[in-house]
Length: 299
Ligand code: TA6
Image 1 (cartoon, rainbow, N blue to C red):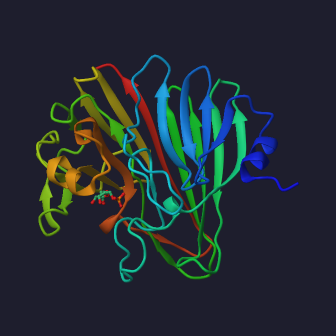
Image 2: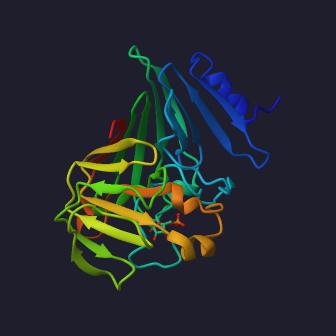
């Protein structure tokens, strides 16, 4: 009897009551997590967190109502992993924007119900010689009242490798026109909409047009103050020196076609990253851990 990927996973992780698995008609495996603190879902392709919602709270993560889950295709919303490069590849335009991790199946290697009530899942991205860069990765996702993410990259080669990465997180907001982003005041940023010119952020960031900026040398704490949902979303990061702030606004949303009607009003990307000037130089056999913790606080 041939076992499907779904059956194999259900058998392998049958001892963990926090999770269940489903498979879509086109073969996309989704892991559903429910514990006493929160619920979430993760697509095996890209180890892509689709949803995260602490109990008795509005969702923290936004997923487009038009998001398409299909093999080899990126998903609009959630937490795409941009790896092992952010943006366009530096020299080969035939390679995918934001790298290949988000459109490739990862392996779920461990699931734990922690004693503090959180659920921890560990994913692995294995290197193969057919891949452009000699890098492997592990991704540890811990789900509780906070969402705790650790992306650990390993240089499996004997040469030095350039790594850029991002947790390309789409946050749910009440109305993006009313939010304020605190923590980036005084940071230099590259405005990708104005010929990659460099500017310095003055005061809180507001969103009143298309915004697509790579903030550099960023602090460890960035906050979204959201009067619409009457909350703050706090981003605590480690080993991230860049933050990309992106909202497509009206025209780009219409061109992209998969944000749903007025979807841009309820989403805001603040991406915990190492990009542009902050690209990481990874020595042979060295590791790099990019971490982010997302939490909710009162306004
Ligand atoms: O991180 C911002 C960005 O690079 C934008 O320029 C926009 O392209 C967004 O990512 C979405 O990219 P995707 O490849 O997921 O459509």
